[in-house]
Image (cartoon, rainbow, N blue to C red):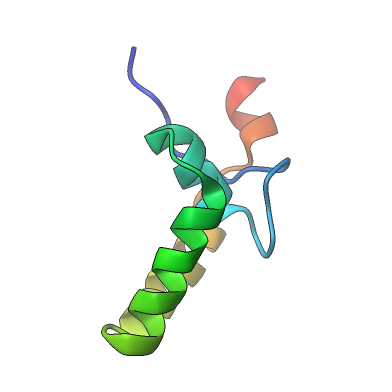
Amino acid sequence: MKKKLYKSTQDRKLSGVLGGLSEVWNIDASLLRIIFIVLTLLMVGLPMIIVYVAAALILPDDKDVWE
């Protein structure tokens, strides 16, 4: 079964993008948040933030996906 990408309403700190990714990829959300912060601060910077904001605007909430 193919998993759909969505924003999590249960596991969110800002918009739920990383919480949704962690559910789809079946990894811990805290680990994903740490990886995102490290990549943003050390390597990628602004493009990572732009992708996060775009995903926050585009992705549906999990309650909209399951209804």
